[in-house]
Image 1 (cartoon, rainbow, N blue to C red):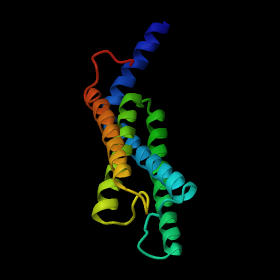
Image 2 (tube, rainbow, N blue to C red; image 1 turned 60 degrees about the vertical axis):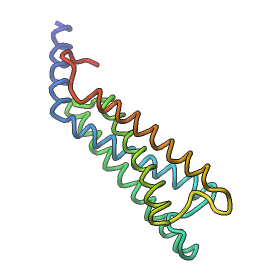
Image 3 (tube, rainbow, N blue to C red; image 1 turned 30 degrees about the vertical axis):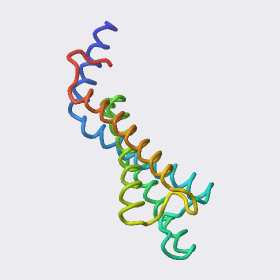
Image 4 (cartoon, one colour; image 1 turned 180 degrees about the vertical axis):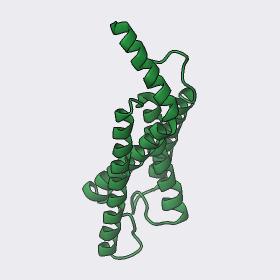
Length: 166
């Protein structure tokens, strides 16, 4: 009797995972974006004082830009958690796919920040008055590693295995 219930639950879980595969992905991506922005804001902006989100004006404008950036990270995280709760309610949460989205979102944020915001738009740099090259290289290599991990996990979960339960 227990095996039948477990089998039925696994079947429903597998069916729902397939149905809500994209929602698992986006929940993870949003959480990754929020997490990366939160770590950037907390560590580099507030604790180390290395830069603000926008450094091309006064310190007050820099602080306001940090506040808007922090609000973005909060909204992305909350949106992710709403999707996460919905997936749990529907018995459709898929940890491996969600983690793939998380790594991919974190890496995408970091690569976007390191290339577009730092170099193309010049909104800010990681640090000032130092040789910036090692910081830029480390920043973007970490971003690529996160993207690769996320990409591998997403590739592995592009199809459900025949037997669900993993």
